[in-house]
Length: 425
Image 1 (cartoon, one colour):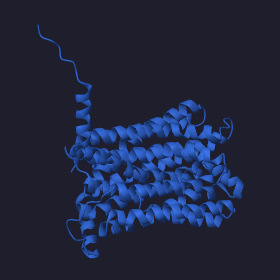
Image 2 (cartoon, helix red, strand yellow):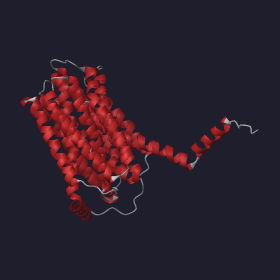
Image 3 (tube, one colour):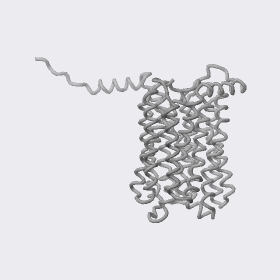
Image 4 (tube, one colour):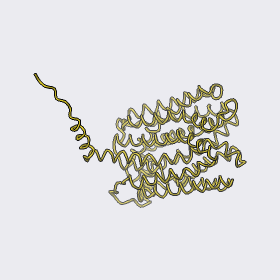
């Protein structure tokens, strides 16, 4: 009769320790810490903007400014970033990614302190100037981190890391309104002074946890570099421009809707303010974050799947925003549900665009292409709040008629012009 062998727990523990001490185990741990460090960069980028959305109405009252002037706190930051991002992209291709990211984080955090003093002293001029300076610093953060991901990883690992970056970006949008509302319980301008702490932590993570690959070839002079960018657009221009438009539109709608929702929640008949408002704003964003993370994990450069998910995402946005024409202020639960469906569509779209655009070019031009894409995304963020504010002055229905039509146009462009092969490079 055979005797059953009992498992030796010490043997299992020894195997576990052996795996942890093996080169594969060390490499896996190192990759996790790299992911963490990379994820902090888009996180601090978003915190520096979205954390201020819940306090815009309070800022308007405290500083005695108009709704348009309060929206400029978001808009000028984003315009400054959008203008400088291509320059930052060129510098990152010319020198290195970390040589741009690290000083950018320092400028970003330092200007946050200056903006805090502008709010403390009730100096709108200083506050706006500091926000523009913050935008210059922001230009060298997440857009360059996206190019760095393309340098560090390949194939499915790259799409997973890009999905994590988009999820971190979206995760920052989820916690930002809640965090901004919580900090406002201390004093309304506390978010300005808290933000540099996050910048400092991200700076340490990038310094100590990321080892940038050494360049295999010397950087191109400016003339040949610009010609190579032109050649990329001659070859891929149709689908790149359509992708750029879709990505910037998604961010335009996202930030515009946040501005819209933040404004109506404080008015009649809801009177939702402070931390509860932060949690309500986080609901549609949570749908985007979860979707973006899952999408980035499953697409793995599968071109057929990428095309399918992009079209589904834009279709969801079009339908949900179209229905919001009739449910924008009559039933809050239905309205938030529709915004969540639209955000899920955004979560399907953005990781796919990131993977395609990052993989479209070689390392030498990757910084510029991803930066042009990020620049247009920032323009979308910049013009969302003021244009939504202007359309709200016309009518709420005008807001959602406009964005549903724009989403339909983006769907048409992506459907007919963006056709990746079976395997994205």
